[in-house]
Length: 167
Image 1 (cartoon, helix red, strand yellow):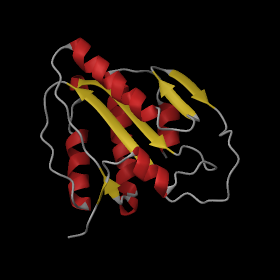
Image 2 (cartoon, one colour; image 1 turned 60 degrees about the vertical axis):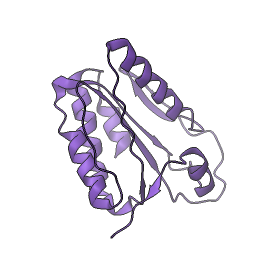
Image 3 (cartoon, rainbow, N blue to C red; image 1 turned 120 degrees about the vertical axis):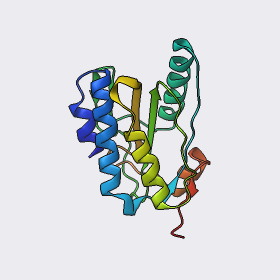
Image 4 (tube, one colour; image 1 turned 90 degrees about the vertical axis):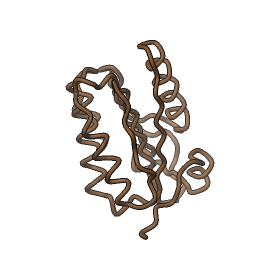
């Protein structure tokens, strides 16, 4: 579903930012039974240069964790390629979805301990009006069927993920 969302986006503007965010949240909500871990980080930056530099830095850090980007759509520049590594016989158990949002104002988020907290955070993100959005990036790995994210790699690349409990 995330591939389909990325392929639909035509440009980088507030209307498309809202579309990306809303559709991604809907996709995550449809598969919330598969969400086993989460992490949340919120930073407040003052000034246009400050948030743009920070947003780009975090985006690059996250993208650098991927073996390959098989699908991208950044600022309306689209690219798609076949995963070049040979399948190693492992099946895919994990997918990591990173949502980066730059918006005017500050939001307070609850700590995410349970699946319901994750739903509340996603609802809060989706409540940001399009007019306040300055940037949205949705990154996920693996992006292709033949790519695999092992538990070892997941733990190494995403040490801040915390298991969701059902209490």
